[in-house]
Image 1 (tube, rainbow, N blue to C red):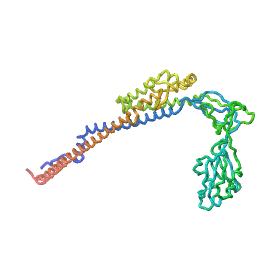
Image 2: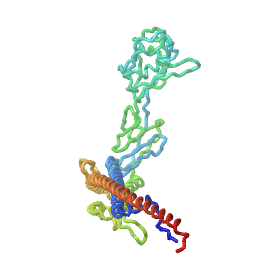
Image 3: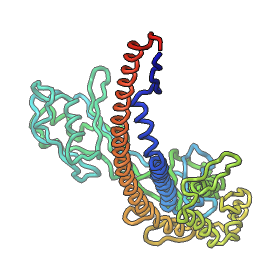
Image 4: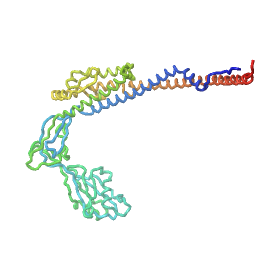
Length: 461
């Protein structure tokens, strides 16, 4: 009996793919590691860019305020109005007697006829002086002949030179349309009068004659008195007064003769000031936590991976520099206001200590924290912002330079990957050809073995 020739059974394509992968395996592993690291660096740099920009934005927002401190101004009887105060306001108590409130002029014209034709001009004056004119030639908007009271009101509101000075509306009373004109500004200077001499329609001209105006509200200035009813008079067109430095007062009710004046108290708003300082602390800690995570060495025992920039000395310098800026500002001064730094530079706030120190030296906190100003940076905020610009600058900042360098690296890695793919394909085709030929040779040998076995396998020696 002729023994058959046996050989391993395999697929040339699968075998070629396995050998080709093995051929580039070590280089592909290095390539994958470098690509993953570069992609992680790009993501982290953009995250760092966003964190720094967000923190700088908070510093700029703080810089637009006159102070991190806050004060309140309150009416003793809020029925008379409301008030607000800036940090520039001095604590104290003030009394005012409201003799009268400012009002806006409002006049009405009744029995306005539909004009047979819309032509001519209507003049509107404020406090006796011409303010603007209304062209009636294009007031007809419904396509019907003539001009209705509503179209007249629309023409007044749309007059190019009106610009919100006077508002016109139509009020229907017992089926009769009345034209109501309201000055948009309070005060005697807003008294409305009409000049109908330019209107060509005689009935409409007569209806809008100043003699036919009915005063609904007489325009007048506000008049308040500092102290009691016989105190120093303060008169103006608006009901909002700013005569006390840093304080805005809006009066909504007048006193009756002989009534007691209303008291306005200006005092420190410690809760809002504490919230402002806490926000400064929180924003700093938020940025620091992002950087700390990026440079963390990790902890294999706790299965905590190292940060993206754990071996990056430049980012670690950024981390240390933020802490040193705080310490250079004088930790004793910060601590006096309840702002303390832990060993790692993280800030915390003691609200009670802050309130206590503000009572002793309220202006010292503003000087200490300072401003992130582009022209005159000062204090901690100014120093932090000035340093962070070295990283965030859109023209030559560290992050921009690092991103550009990393982008170039990613391009090179893509090119290298293409080369590896070509090497893999070359090896694959080579191995595929060889093992396909081997498979064919084995098939021929097995076929010959079967033939011989058929011819001689059943014969005895």
